[in-house]
Length: 221
Image (tube, rainbow, N blue to C red; front, side, top):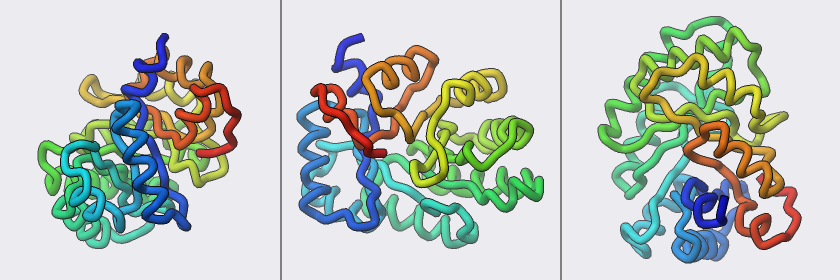
């Protein structure tokens, strides 16, 4: 697998709480140079990036990030603002407390509301696998499918663990045919990227792809 194939599925990510405009510009320029699938950035930078780059970069942002326990109303407001500012893709964190209490209908309803708000734009649902058991993950596959969301995503990169191949296998068995998979967090080597793509991931969320593919080590997201 060549580097161009890998870059084509990378959401080039910078979600550090101390991210600066200079760093955001850097990943935008890198995304243009390497033709990544998108840049994934904090909502506060979306408007500024859109004004500077327009459609030259595909802007992904995060909603309810990284803990997911915001109210649906807050997530909806955040989503609508990011949409207005120029985001084209939205990675939303589910309410993990609802998952633990088995309020899966509530999760489905929230995701349906957000998908309706963005229409034809892309909604990716972060279920944060490191905090879930197998039964919860399977139930959330159904929530994501039933809501009409476009992707199920393994992790925020801020939890206790990142993507695993075992979770990708579980997703493939239980998601609907129209749901794609995004792996995020914990990918440190070129072989990691290739393995997740070969297992069926259509997107990889990582801040380290450029360094890794250049042969440099990375302990980043």
